[in-house]
Length: 421
Image (cartoon, rainbow, N blue to C red; front, side, top):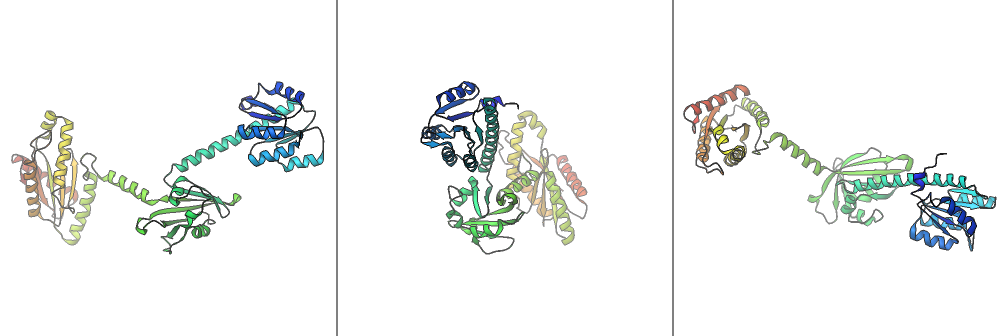
């Protein structure tokens, strides 16, 4: 058997025996192989040492002054159920052996003890302890991950809750899963079932045995207004072999917020924070369909900044980016909420005006032209724009855009800072 010497070097051992010769032989054999070896002559001294230092492994003689190894093993198990205990005995006593089994000792060795065989058993105990530590580290890591999550988790066995992560404990206003008063102060409404509010413990008892059950719930604390209650997706998982259950509560509010964020990111121009080209085209096709169906008016304004390339060379990209942002804010403050305002590309912008014909769009364009030409832009000073205005007359989106582009070209040809149809 390959002895895990590196595991032995991490092991702290308490050996209990009042025989000085045996203790010294053991010290001579193992002292340099272990992280530490402590020898105590009595059970009382051993318990005192164990309480203070918590060694990884305890090896004890079956017969001790004023006590016995089985009693010591039982007391250690009460203090630390996972600590392995080995018993060494000079008697092949069935009653003692049965007692050792009942005490759940790690192993029972008969004298005279072969030190090589003892070392093998210590190495086996070291491997078991290492596995226990690895499992505990994994549990601690999982607990830390769950405790830093905004989502809420609980788990238990039978009908008893044994774990809640930090978010759920905070929501219930309790310090540990043992405290159940906080749960009784929370009501649950299953939104899909349109149920009446029921106390959380009653809801838990109903769902904890339903493997794969998923529902949308509102959790309402006693100190909370119903309008302030958050909505969660609750999922139940059963662990049948352990008679266990786990329930997660995922905050839909957070998910909806993220969904809106990415939706806005996809349809907004990152520099000016107005609609981008793709969003404008989507809205254009929608408004064309609506105009055809209901025979409503629809007009488009295309405009750009005059001599923008010259400005870029003179003032630099950063100053011109500031101009684009300032211009977008100025125009955005002067269009209706029903209008569709977008950056089409570079210094070019588009405004779609549902339920407004050519005359109304021309007035809006002239208003914007005057507002822009009379505005003092930071780091730039004066700037002007040219505007092309067209009315929808049944063509498709591409033809409509071409018509607006042609109108803008005519405005440029007139000398810029003009409005043309």
